[in-house]
Length: 621
Image (cartoon, helix red, strand yellow):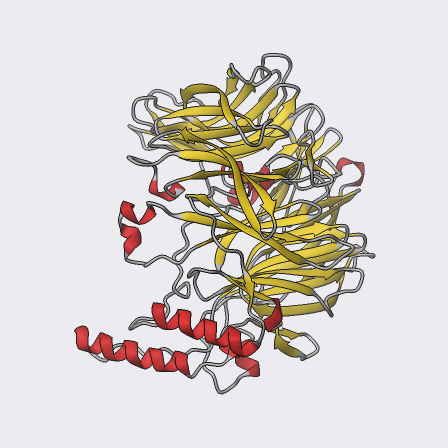
C-alpha cells in the first residue's frame, strides 16, 4: 500500500470552484450528481474505542465524569445524546420539545419545557454549565433558497440547526440563539465548553435536467445539459450556507479553510465546526475537507476523520469493487486553547465499522478495518486487520499491521484499551481476537477465542474482565437466537475465555422469539455504574401454533463477581400482549440515581426501584 499524498488548501474561491467543477464534470450523469453528490457511502457510523486520559492514555472505560451521563468513547469528551443528566436534573428531547425533569428524592417531576419548532426532526444535545446546545436535523428547503432566490434548491434537502438554550432556570428554559446551515450532522462532541459539530454537506441549487424520453440519446443529451449547469455554477452552489435567527446569512466556510484531496472523494464537504459556548453561536472556527465520511474519533486534543474515496455507483454491485479500497484518515489538532489545524493524512485498507475502530495511544493511531463493508456480510476475500499509524510530517504513515483476522467475516465490535485491542468478527461463529499493540511496529495476535454468536459492543468492567453485548447464534448457520450478555476473562491475552453468559429470554420450544438491544448499534444506550451495567432490551415472541403474540421490553441489570454474572436480572416494563400504547416506554437510555433507575423511551419514562424491581412511576411526554 503506497502512502497517499496529504491534503492541500484550496487557496482561493476561484481555485476551489475550479476543483469542484472539474470533479463534478467527471461524475455527472443524466440525473445529476445523484443522491450523494457522486459519492457512494460505504461506511456507516451508528453513531467509538477505549477511554483516554487527557486524550492519550486509556482509562478504565467508565466514560465521562458522571457515571449516569452519556456513555462516551473518550473520557472528558462528551457526546451528544437524547438524554442528559446533571445533578437532580434530567433533560430529555422528545416530541419537538426540550423537557426538564427533577429526579430529587428518587421520583420524577416535569419542571418545564420549550418547543423547538415544527421543523424539529429529532437531534441530540450537550450541556455546559447553564447552557444547553441542541443539534438537530431538518429535511425542508435548505437555507440557501432564502439567500439565493434565483437558484432553485432541491426539494426535501437536509439542513442542520444548532440551538443554544439557557437552562439556568430549569422550570423556564429560554432560547438564546439559533444557527441553521446546509448539511447533515455526522457527530457532535463537547470539550471544556467547546461544542464541535462535524457536518457533511452536498451541492445545492443546481437545477438538474433529466432525460426527455427514453433511450441512450435522451440520457446523453441530459448529461450534456447537466455538464453545462456545472460549468455555469458558482461557489455558492458548492459550499454550505448559513442563516441566523436574526436574519444574517452567508457561506458557512471560508474558501481558505477548505482542503482538497489528491484523488476523487465526491464533491461534498466534510467540516468540523467549533463553537465556544461561553461566547455563543455568533462565531465559529472551521476546518473542511472535500470528501464524504461518517466516522469520527476525537480525544481532548485531536480529531481524526475517516473519509471514503469516490466509487462508481454501478460498480458497488460487484464484490470486485471493494478490492484495493482504502479509507483515508485525516488528523486535525483541535485544542481548546488554540486554532484548529490540519496536520496529516494517511490511509488503511478497507472499511471501518464505527468510531470504536479508531483509537490514539501514546502518539499512535490504531485502526481496525475490514476489506469488505459490514453490510456486505463477509464472504470470500473478506478479512480484517489492525493498522498502526504515526504522524510523519503531513502524512499518517503505517508503522505496523497485523492482518488475517476473521477470514470470510466482517468486524462486529472493536475496543482498544491502552496497549491492547479487542476485535470481534462474525459470520457463523464469533472469534474474539486479542491484539498486543505494546510494540507499535510489531503488533501481534496474542490470543483468539471462537464461540457461537457475537458481541456488538464491548465494555471493560473490572481488571481483566470485559462485558460483551450482542447475539447468540447457531454455530452451523450463523442465524441469531437472541440477546446475549457475555463476561470475558482477558487477563491472559494469550488465552481469552468466556466465563459466563446471560440471556433474558432464551429461545423456547414452540415459540419464535427475537430480543435485541439498542446497544448493538448505539453505544450511548449502555450505562455503567461502579458495580453494575444496565442494558435496555426490546423484542417480541409468538406461539407457532396459536399465533399468540407477546411484547417484551425493559432493562437488564447486570452485575458481576469473579467468574460469574452475579445478580443479573431482568427488569421488565412490558411483558405480555401488546396494545400499542406501551411502546412509548420502550427504553432507549438508562439513568441511575442511587437505587432508582430511570428508563427513558421515546414517549415516556419509567421509574424503577432497583431493590424490588418494581415500576413505581411512569410519565408520558
